[in-house]
Image (tube, rainbow, N blue to C red):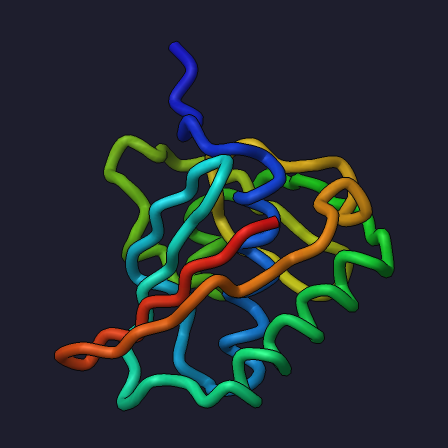
Length: 145
C-alpha cells in the first residue's frame, strides 16, 4: 500500500524550500502544519507577529534563487536511530517505521518526508507568496508555484 501523501510534487518541493528559508531567516522551525494543493498551498508556523512586505519579498527572492539554481532533489534512507540525531521526528506518524526516507534539496534542505517531489528545483517554476496572516501565535503563509 502506498503511504505517500497526495501532494503535488511541485508545490511540495516548494514547501520544503520555503520551510528551510523560514528556518534560516527567522530561526522559527519548520511549519507545524501544511496544506499542499496544486493551485495554492499554506504553511503555519509558530511565530510572534505577521511578516512585513519586505520580509515576504525576501523569502520569495531566496526561494526563487534555490529554484533557479536547478539543484537536484534526491532521497536517502536512514535508520530511525540515526535520523533522530539530525532531524526532528515529532511530526512523523507512528507507522513511518524504522527506516526513514530523507528528501534532500541540493545542500539547501533535508528532512524526513513520504511525499512526492520534483527531480530538480528547476521543475518548480516561479514561487510567489500570495498572502500571510497572524493570529494567536500562528503565522500562516499562502503561496503558489
